[in-house]
Length: 405
Ligand SMILES: Cc1ncc(COP(=O)(O)O)c(C=O)c1O
Image (cartoon, rainbow, N blue to C red; front, side, top):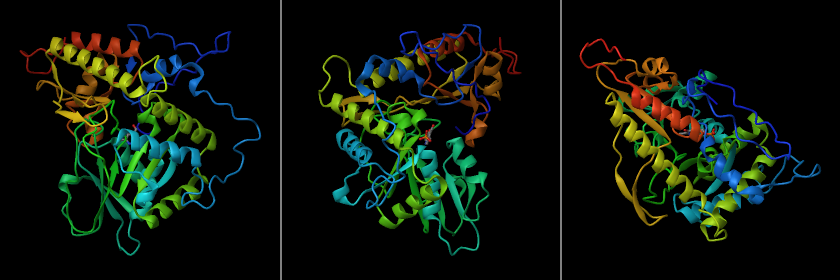
């Protein structure tokens, strides 16, 4: 995962004597809690309660070949996964993904790999200078890392899209809902010679109302945020242009000769189960999206309550919209809190660190360090400690030095 300065090693869960996984030990109420990374462990309890419905046995002789679908445009994409991806988009209505309408699916090792693949595919080859890659601030901090890592001759990071005013080719990444601040976005550059990559990692009904069917040239999605299975490292792109899809496929071929079939089988099964349940296959429990939305709503209520009690922070406001998937009106409940310290404090990350809360500074997202991004996707026990701790932080208004008690 990029941006891992604050990494605490994920606990390898000990196997219980009966062979089932145990819950991770609860954090001590005085220990440091890490809300820096958006690791979606909050959904573990749901999937555990599903028992063996999503279990998969892969025998030693299965899934051995590199090839999945040699005649398909993305030769390493398993037909089972392609079917589940198209099905879930049809069901949720969040993106146009039908093969009959000429939409190609390219699978990647996480959507992070597909950001690279999209840039590789879209950059013109006839330019004297690398193509500028921009994203409106505050932007997802990993884009910059991904773009700068290899110092490519094809593209270069140019930061905030609001500041881009050159008459040359550019690629704008539009993340909507946005990471870190949850805002609903559109391209901001709107100049000639530009290409847009839509990162729709959070355009799912547990995070935001599905207001329209997205139908852009390149749309990126990830299993990590759709169902919470970040460890499987599956992402996919929906691409309109066959040549672009072929170039993205080539990129993944050269970098990793395809994508783990074991992971693809797992993703196919889990996405298929989510669809089955939304279509009434499981009457015993809530479907995943209803469950996850209820959890996100509860977390946001607790967070607002903590911010109110503390009187030291503020949060963005989100509009209420009609969701075509659920048939209800509700607010966006982003995966991250974009928290701002009141005006007395210039460095919100340090303030929270002093209270044993690890967050990612606004400066990492091209924004003011008075902001931090906090993941709301962690385990229940950690989230509860976080809101409790946050609610007790009081910034003294009187002394003007940002001194906090
Ligand atoms: C906006 C956005 N895009 C892409 C990713 C990466 O997803 P993946 O786990 O599929 O690489 C993330 C992960 O946090 C994200 O927030």
